[in-house]
Image (cartoon, rainbow, N blue to C red; front, side):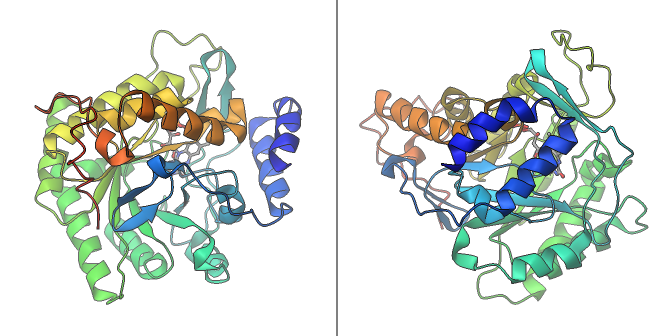
Length: 372
Ligand SMILES: Cc1cc2nc3c(=O)[nH]c(=O)nc-3n(C[C@H](O)[C@H](O)[C@H](O)COP(=O)(O)O)c2cc1C
């Protein structure tokens, strides 16, 4: 019913400026009834990061920055929803316009600049929420004018650690000056160690796993450095990747020169390559969330075969609406069946040339070793 309404509304929403359309979508979701519980195909279930997911398809950060409607979004069929990026203090972000549709390219450019209501307002919303509502990640950032980035992330751990199923250290958005420098070797290990210590200090019964979200615009040396840092740290997983500042020559839209992060189809190849590389460099031992340009079940499957235990998407929703989530799940289950995988866990990394042959039926002994 909601999906039908959304499908009918999509052409109208596209007539609005992108940010207005987005706000209209959030308002409509506010009014949406609580989602009915739907069951996913059992082959899509995966236990990773110590959590059981009924399906691996998540909503990427940036859609519900202020945690206004995470449970209504779960009702679209997502296996998990990531809210944020949230910064300690509220901030307005960059001046508008700051969000651009590149329709011929099936892409978006954004330079939102972490507009959000700040830790307290967002956490208050999450405290009112029923934790049984669905798996929720909180994506943490730093204020643009912050003098101490590490302290900002640590505050995020204090506030959202007790409220979220996982936390994300986001050091990869291109629209906060200097943020991506935190991916540099020295800075990164200081940041990760501080965040992990802070999590321990919370003394929670079930401490949330912490993931690092990285950019696709890294040199081979930077990629190697991040992998080494991550391997030597206690971090629980990686999200690969954020938007890109690159502008592939294939872009046709006149909006292509707009500054900001590019997402959607043109990001698919580079983000999947980086995912595969990170899977190899972390020797398949670290859970990876693959994100960037997923617009179909085949795209999601490619990320999983490259090494992702879970996937996320955002931009394709702009073009295909919420019905896409169910289509991806149906197609993904069919692809697993086609290739003889009984469970998603068997397919993770199976297309990666890390030395493992692609796994078919008969190789089912391989359990998802990222499990609890
Ligand atoms: C409008 C917009 C806002 C975004 N905001 C955030 C954000 O606040 N934090 C973050 O980590 N990623 C943010 N992202 C990046 C997405 O989470 C995702 O990594 C990226 O868009 C690639 O996925 P996609 O091609 O499926 O959109 C944003 C993306 C878009 C399009």
